[in-house]
Length: 428
Figure 1 (tube, rainbow, N blue to C red):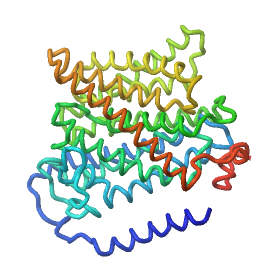
Figure 2: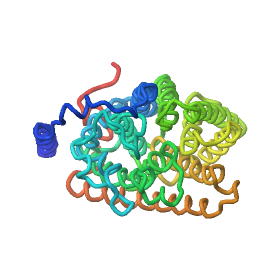
Figure 3: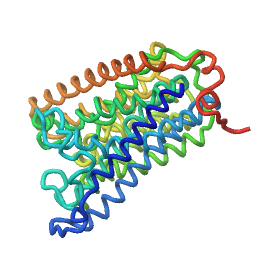
């Protein structure tokens, strides 16, 4: 058991010491750049903070849904991503995502290795009116959130140390190439005309599909019935997510402009209509209109609008919220008996991301504009993202499991992960 922690400690120490040899020059943060727009810069600092707020939001959202004996473990799995991914992103993650293009699939790891050449100056292709370092930090928050979303699928049964290794490898092997293909100016999907305004493919589809792979690989829990331990935590998490999502979507404009305001409006609208659609549909199906259902419904709407938030009309955002809520609601019950996706990550984020991406191909220079080719390119990009995320994630689970068991023992599962993994306990 100690060996794995010795390895993690040593890697952290090596990275920290190596940082002494990659200290940036003062000119990176003192040079004058006339292209910088200070209003845009102030907004993007705020948006970055809001996006980071979403990870604690996921923590409370998921933590409130599990059994009392697993609440701390579940919440920590989100929080630890803020530490792990921040380091990975600084060392090589940003460079793999946004470094000089290699074949349209990945960035050159040497371009921004250890944040080399990432400073106050703008970048004409990536951050024309804000410092490149601020763009990198904004994108870091997306990279942090993505593996945190996955945790809900294998809640209550994963080894903490194995999970840490998983999120490192997932971020490098799955997240960065998808981010590069979609968002880099020379990325493969972007060259096809694929639109993903704020992460429908990059964040939600990739994490949702990776979550499905994890739920299948780890198998069902011994006692899979979900009785949420703390519904106020769920509501708090939803509030943090809803607020943070304004930075997630509006911030993706990278500027203070009409696109940012439109994204703000559409984000709120889709979440609102999805929440109401979810609880009314539940009521029509004979279920009670609960707080958890309302929260999950709002999340579905937020996921659905993400890939097109700044590019559609408010009327279209109403439709997106309604359709996404309906499809995700039905998906939850379709998957509930076959796969133990503990907190319905795939039906909400995976399916929601796919639905949103398809609707983006309808509304944004797609089918409604008679552009069949662009619609088909979106479909191909979705298929590639789903296939790659699932296969790569499953292989990552498999390989890690050869060295560290991904799943805790039955005894530890009975005791609960809070005690068995962290020697901590929620409540009295």
